[in-house]
Image (cartoon, rainbow, N blue to C red):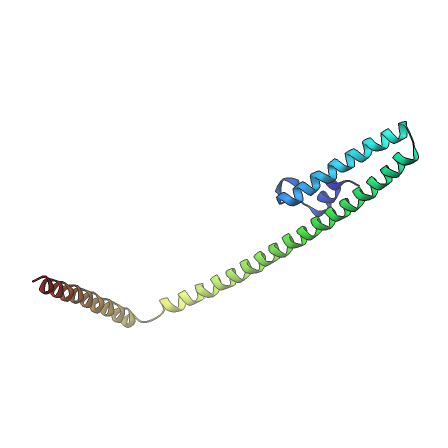
Length: 145
């Protein structure tokens, strides 16, 4: 019953775990060390009452350990799903980028006439903007008089 074996088996690092799971792991380690100390004490002075308490503590520690293992496995599954989703998203982005590259090549092949239309449209917008500013300025001056 070693929580470090579970972490190694799942490929998790204790330092990168969320705070709650990190606390659980620390608690399991603490409980295991206390059970080992209690076993030594019971071995030195065995009584029925102390052995019963030791068995109760062992049972609790085992249940806590199994619960911590399940939570770690669940966390690992979430990490795997997240990594898989990121991998799929990256694959989609790569495919989209390739499609855009193809589209860019098609856009570059268009005739020059469309570029002239775009520039004349920009000129019209520029002239319209200047006229709008001049008109609003004239209206503002007339309001003040």
